[in-house]
Image (cartoon, rainbow, N blue to C red; front, side, top):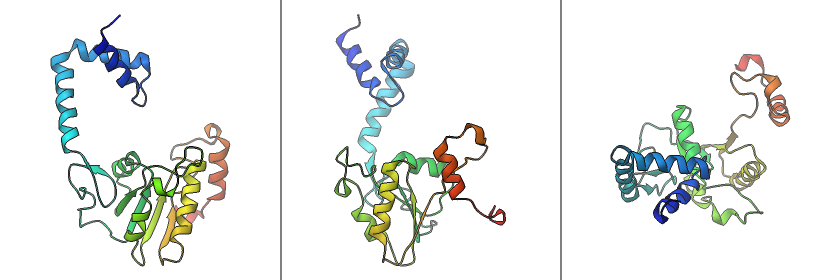
Length: 198
């Protein structure tokens, strides 16, 4: 059996997404075997991140500055705001270079079962960011919670003279129909477009 410190480290690592107890044990073993190459730089990077990272007061992204580098970029379209559930979704859209406007991170979705209502999410500040003529893109997941949140936000924004859009749902690029689930196929069928729009 390993020492208390090692077991504590394994338990903490096992809390990370994608790592269970076995994967965490293997990761910790590698860190300990290669202390100088892996563990020491990781400790330094974690300490630096802990001290430097902050939440953007405008969009709720995480960065080393407030406002974040995205909100501080004057080249972006101020009339375009993409609403996402979490920072990971923002990062995914940025990786794809799919967004030329700004973002608004909700911090989750509405969920009555988990006790998450509008007050627990970053919704109120969105209203102050919606200028007349803006387009609000709801880039929320296609889950029941994501769609409930999208409907709630749509109701909240109705009457504010903004355009509300959502991401298309359906067949992914390179996807084969035979491998898709029924919900994805149904969403793709409902959201079909004329061929001239491709």
